[in-house]
Image 1 (tube, rainbow, N blue to C red):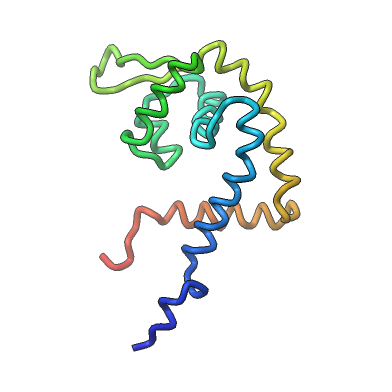
Image 2: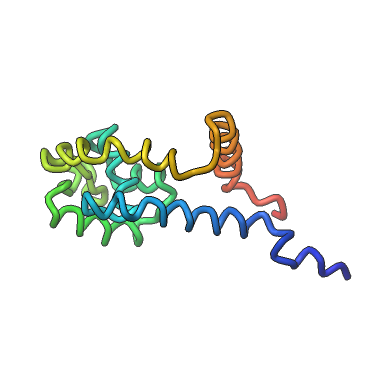
Length: 147
């Protein structure tokens, strides 16, 4: 048996995991300034773009399940950033809508991507390549080659 496969240095998952944590850590001081966690921030990015969508749609876009989203959205609703309501045509579906206060927060957040770009040691072409590679992995994440 070749146990080298089990070495941490031979795992693609580890640098992805470690980089993800490091990137979120870089965001923290900027997000603290506007009162958001990273997960709230990515939810707000979707809402700034779409204005309104269902919890299911939001979860699909963010790769998050409803068990993670529901408490997150409750806190954001209490903060006045969004509202949640049952869909009148389908009671099982919850619609999330950006509020005026949530829209106004966009002005405070607009410089965050530029600030993060300065923290990440990649040039524009490297960042573009990494972006495409990561989405390639995400696009195949629903397929299991062992099945």
